[in-house]
Picture 1 (cartoon, one colour):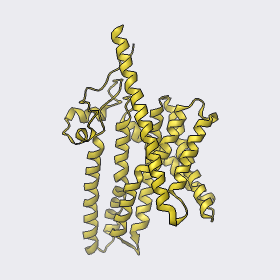
Picture 2: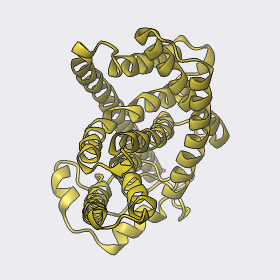
Picture 3: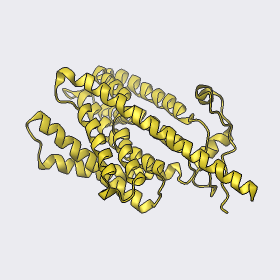
Picture 4: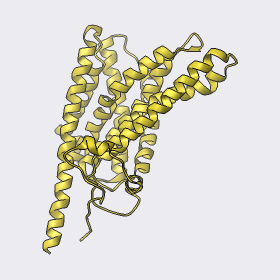
Length: 315
């Protein structure tokens, strides 16, 4: 019988806040980055904690770049700030919250059958093909009617993310629904990084100069909204693709796809008077659904290992 084991890290199930902020050992850092590479099977039951460190580090780098660009932009007029400082600042701003979500998604995945390096590789490959599909889609047509325009944007973006993500799932042949959720979330995070960098660039580069205030405002907006956007919509599709048998001819799979597209459509609601309310509703529904799926699938994973260990001990 294949050996199943739970990571020997300190497990905290009742106080995730304490687990997140306590001091962690070098072995715990090593376990995170060696997971999926050390030929050990089983699950990892430790509460997520590295994502907080990633956020603190990313925020520090972003604020440092912001200060440097703001100060040097006042004195340097030979284009150096536009060539070096500004692109770096925009890139860090776009990566900041999305890297945090990437780490969190990987930490919430309970199995030890994929490495963080492979997750990052899948994200990069998916976003390359997603950007290609989405850009070609927008080149084909952009309807003038805002309602139809939003519908086309939702379709081309969800299709652009789902296609490479589903191909990745087929290639990797992992039949665990929470694995589908992870890969779908990863594909969505890649799209979010690309989109955030674009929005921040457009908002902050005006009249051939860097506008720090718009840059900070758009970065803050994207920081607070990315957690409930593409990562959820594509995560749901990835989850459904593995969860339901023969998904392409399964009505349940397509209902999840419709839910994902519906959340995206409401998020981009084309009526300005109700756009903020619609975005909040979309975020709350999406977070509620994804949270319950994660709790359910993590519980299934933990119970399966415990039951297997009990059977092994009896034998």
